[in-house]
Image (tube, rainbow, N blue to C red; front, side, top):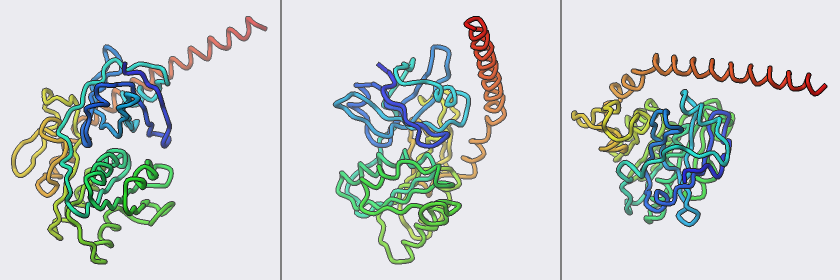
Length: 294
């Protein structure tokens, strides 16, 4: 249980893991997440379930190494076992036949939007996907998103692949060309989701966003994921993680995302120092063993 059966590098800082978790694999739905703990003393952190295979009993997690714990997870290998994987948590994505649904992903958000696009397609919708990244090397899950989309558009900020520009530029172009959209789902950096919502609001298109990036504990107990939606306080983990994007206070969201940056920086520095010391000791040990052998 909780064994890593597959580890795959999608980009230098983004890795895909298949985890053996039969019960979660059977029950999860698009939009839900799990809370992971690497070891007995490790912190709890939430990860969106990108996919699952009930027959083989696995769930797929895509992890971007941005902090101490995710960097630590990046050192694990196939065959290693995670201490805890709890879920599925969060409210599932509302999936029904809406008509034409545009699914927009940015960066690691491409992994989060993929199961939603897949579920929307299965519900009978026409799915148009727009996925983007800063540069070609950071673009992930293009083929997976392509396989569940009727139409896909790819952008990169620097123009190294697909169309040069942002996902919002592509959406604006489609709307200008007369595309009739019934629903937009946007998942990625807060600034990207805000830009999408500003655009769709002017066209009166219902827009759903995922605020998974602000979650910490994942159960509502820590209160770190408080967000303001429609003038009311909500908890991203138990009330979401998906909300009406036109009702989200993105300025407050961005401010809260920056609250723990000093603590995260100190934790990362301590981790890098620990890893550095471990590698130095290992190198010294290997050198000593080589001399003895000689």
